[in-house]
Image (spheres, rainbow, N blue to C red):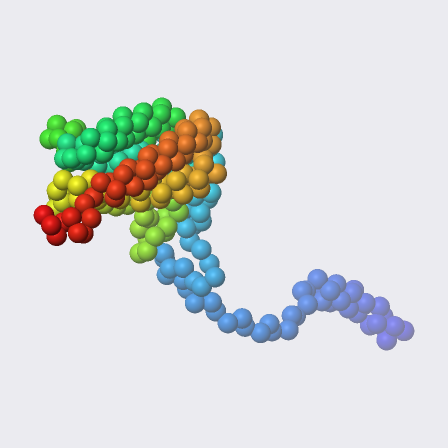
Length: 282
């Protein structure tokens, strides 16, 4: 009986101990330690990762062209469409032709060469006005220095200064790293510099010629320039849109006409040139 009482008295203690044991959390086996990742210094980008700034720049470069299209492709002092870039370059080409023809008409000897140079001035001015009307931004971006007159040169220099002050951006690339060393190449400015250099070299070459030799040299230049312009306009017509496309089509027809006139003039100048025997007699 005593043993039975001891067992019965021990039951609550065993029950409480079992209950406390059940409430204790199970012992978890030790977990293997993970290797610590190296702490990334602030501003450092690990391989395969892009910084937040680069991500934002990428998003901006993708949304900017769409914003330009929504704005109608026009803006103050900046290229917003391929039409703007095409128009600016064509405006530069026409101004180059106008200045060279103005230079030649005062120095040519043959009357027909003088008439041809005068026609080039007038018709290329008409083309320039049509380009500026189709893409008004080209009158700002497509400004070429005029070396024939001091007043025109001053006007063009002032226009260039205004573009610099307003931060005119004529680059056709929207990417922040569009060129070498992170600098984007301004194609319109490059086209302008090449046109000015070409005009300078052409005038220097013509200045060394006199009389019939001058006429032949000028007509030879026009043959090369208009043949090249014919090819250029044929390609640009495929990429231009709106009114500018029609302007280019009209300019292509005029270019073909100018090229034909230059070919006929060169034949006449060759026929009028004294033969070698006549030169020896003289």
